[in-house]
Image 1 (cartoon, helix red, strand yellow):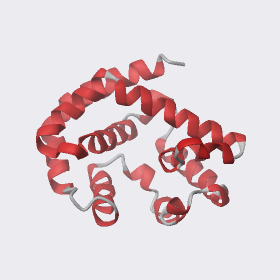
Image 2: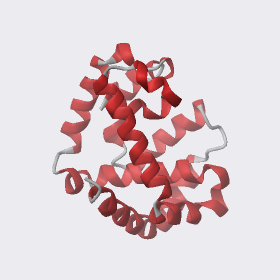
Image 3: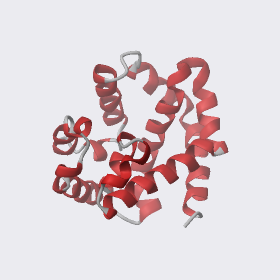
Length: 171
């Protein structure tokens, strides 16, 4: 779980510096990202977003997918999102020593607010978008992103389910 979570923060061959359990998670994260980013249904969501959000379309599409996964978590994993998120928080914090410096800067807020679980609601998604807008990408407009999702949720959700079916079949 820890490696998968920090996958975007570990560049190039630096994953080799981590213990095997974290290294495997980083590599899994990369495999999932490569699959998702090249998948026709993810690209369809990005294409839908492009006219409105330009170069941030893939980031927004990822966040929409995180939201939809949270909503459909039990369907695709067989587990409760709340129990999973609590377990995740405990595991990531127990691996604090291995977290990249940037992740250490936000992990306590992320876990103590149970941000992973909050992706289940549009309010929680909007809060995450606002955090990104405040600290990383000031050009993001959370209200506009949520309104766009609400207008296009059926299309985004349809593509999400097709993508998930294909991702699960990779096992």
